[in-house]
Length: 277
Image 1 (tube, rainbow, N blue to C red):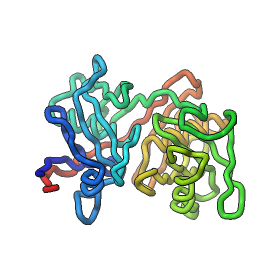
Image 2 (cartoon, rainbow, N blue to C red; image 1 turned 120 degrees about the vertical axis):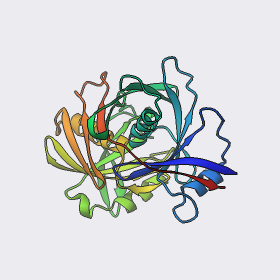
Image 3 (cartoon, rainbow, N blue to C red; image 1 turned 45 degrees about the vertical axis):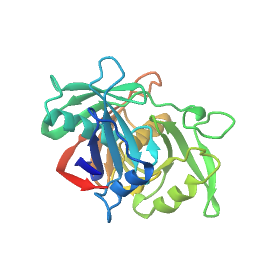
Image 4 (tube, rainbow, N blue to C red; image 1 turned 30 degrees about the horizontal axis):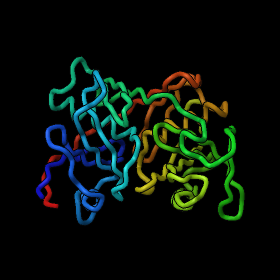
């Protein structure tokens, strides 16, 4: 099977975009994983599959697959790449569009210098939204790792996140903690794991282990989750800059649990190509 693709990236979080708006995606989990393999395929953190929308008013529908071929519910850096992909092909009017994923619509605005602003929806802190296997919602939860108790906040940004505050992200055991929690009974659907260092009320540093992928240079939903948890803990401002290894994202949220959160950051098309699977 010969497949045409577009490689894109947002802050180094890289994607293979498959445009299946006119022909359905028929790739198996094994083929998706092969496509994402950095030695035997194109190589990426996630695969973004564009499809015809089912939601009225949406420009496109899309699905996200992790590097291991498993399905993901959402991707913050990926949705910005979808917007830039469509804009470059004349499918966006007035620099605004709605992208559908999982039956929900997300509004995006194309801004100057390649930036895209995304309405990421309302952060959900209820344990069932992740899901998180605890009896009741709490501001903080704990888990035993490396012979001590680690405190974390939990939130769904369409996909599940556990956020840990650390003194220094540079020395945080991101890979070990992330891998440990993938098989933990607290997270029956696995979880994305963020380690956050507060620099000031308006700036944090963050590293994220993404389920099905491992640590990535940047994670859009992870940045949103970290700020949502930080706001819920009363330690961050309504506008926070998130420093990731791949660059910076701006996250804005009032802290009102009935209001959506916004993310702004870049998205870049790298190259187009074909591959034989």
